[in-house]
Length: 240
Image (cartoon, rainbow, N blue to C red; front, side, top):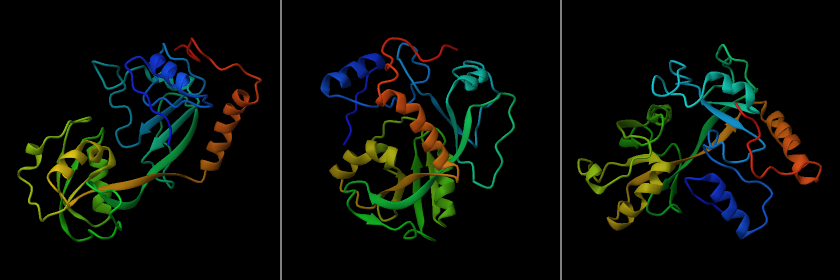
């Protein structure tokens, strides 16, 4: 039910949103390096499996900014780090750290998301599994943890699916995917009546420190709402 705007220039997207209505909070996904965009709170989501690669910046490594950028953000969330696991030791002092995992809720039919099946419904059943996300293996491991027998096929992140990508798949065998993939596959599924295509709905689940995370986040937001701090409009919160 929230307004969404997309633009290569984040400041233009924010301007458009502010023209539509009066907003309290704007969340910018993957906006850390857009320094033309003002910001008041910065959150880094870290893949607990892949972490930081060789810790070099592009093109020598996977990072967009040096590791010491973690010194200047407000929160570091380790996605995929189990509650009973210690935080990985790295050479950089981080901001407030928290652990997060994606908890499976149910399967939804791609062509009609109102149709649902339990997370146990495909257990011990042969299926196909696709994933066009940053770390496809994480999704495949989630399905395997649900005791689903998968024939996996990873795709590139942000991949634009075509019907030809599924020609080798048998229609009688379920095809499982992420919700991100389902957005791109829904028209194909509707057009060709792919009733056996399903996506896994998940929900983020933080560890026992989640209440502390919410408390700290609200403390940072409170000055914006009570008028004691002007909301930024032209410059970033921090310069690296």
